[in-house]
Image (cartoon, one colour):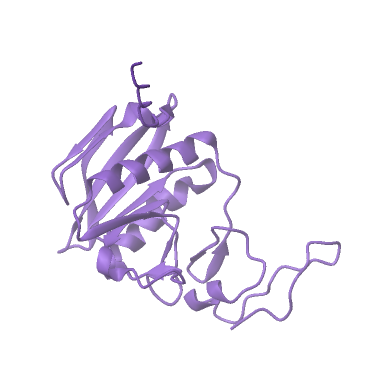
Length: 210
């Protein structure tokens, strides 16, 4: 369903009123004027606050590093939603997914069965969601791996969880400072201290000798 009218941001602004039973995952593509990165959790819209420097740089580091290392059958994307079910459509900060699940430039969400790793970088306003709510929902949806990224003195600390299919719950397999090295779901080696490092451009071409 869509909102009743195109709300403006003036003195007459009104928040969109949810229907009985809450919004659905499909409503995120129809509601007008939603702020960027709006999520749906248990039928309620969740808005994000302005992101910090650490949050943005951590996403960039993981996105770029994973993109360099994923096998051909997988791909990496940042800030795309997963349609877990009718009432839940969260947006991980980074996700690794099966490359064949890419349906083209108009795509707005992925299926949980196509996601291999869901990664959340914790912000002050997302602590409870990233530590408790989202991992529980990702596990119930069958996503094999979940990474939670916390900030410690300006550097990322990565908590890596793997799904126990018998219990449909995540188990912590490691906490990584400075360097993230894993063998599953594929070989991964990320220098976490490089969060503030800028990529070097190509080496200048030497001028020909006279």
